Length: 283
Image (cartoon, rainbow, N blue to C red; front, side, top):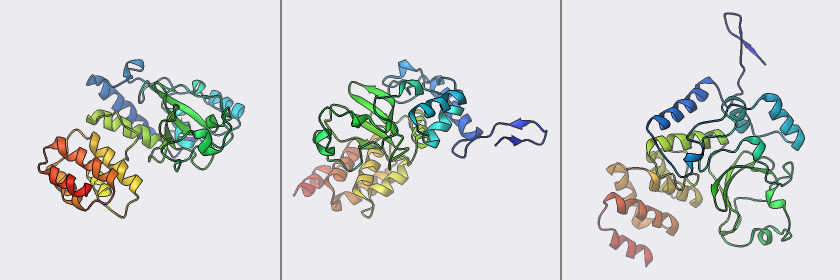
C-alpha cells in the first residue's frame, strides 16, 4: 500500500523489515568505510559499493520462475538498498547470479545438527551424484576456493545465512543472525569498528559486553557460548573489566571449546599467569 504524506504527495511504502532510516544507515556506513580507506579480503572486487536496487518486476519474475518468495529481509534489501555489490568476501552476487543449480522450491537438506565431519551425501542419506545439496538456497557470495555463503530460501531454516565449504571438510555453519539484514548490518558495523573480519559470520550480533555475558553463562547453549567467544576473538581491544570477568570464569569452565577460545582471547590482551589455569583445565 502506498502512503500519503501531509502535502498530498504519495510516498514509497517500505516493508516492516526496512525503512528510510535503515537504508540511510547502510549507505552512511559504506561511505564511512570508503572514506577511511578500509580494505578487507576480496573488497577490491566491490570497493564497498552497492549496485542499484532491483526493479520490482524483475524480482517478481525471478520468484515466479522459481516458484518461491524470497525471505522478506533479503527481498527488502534487493528492492530498496541494492542488488549485489558490497559485502563480505568478494561481495554480494546480484540476484540473477545466485542460482546454484538446485531446485529452489525444495527445502534444503542441510541443517545445523550435522556432524562436524563426514561426507554430506552420506550424512544426509543422499546418492553420491545427487544435486539435492544445492536445493532450497541461493549463493549470496563466495569467499574464494570452496567457501560460499548461502541464504536459505525454503524449509525450516528459511532466511538463515549459512557458511559452507563444498570440500565438506567441516559441517555447514548456520549463523546465529536471525535474518539477512541483521547479518549485513553487523558486517558493516564490525568492519567500521575495526574487528578482525576473517571469521565474521561465526559470532553473534552482540557488543563485547553482551558477548562476555553470554560466554560466561553456563545456562546458555554451548554453541551460542562458542559463538560469543568468536566475537571476542575479533574485537580490536577489550576493556580490562571484561578481561577480568573472563579470567575469573575460566578455571571453572566445563566446555573445552569455550575454554580454549577464552584462553586465546586473554593471552594477546596481556593477561598473565595463564599457564597454571591451562594445566588445571587439562587435568
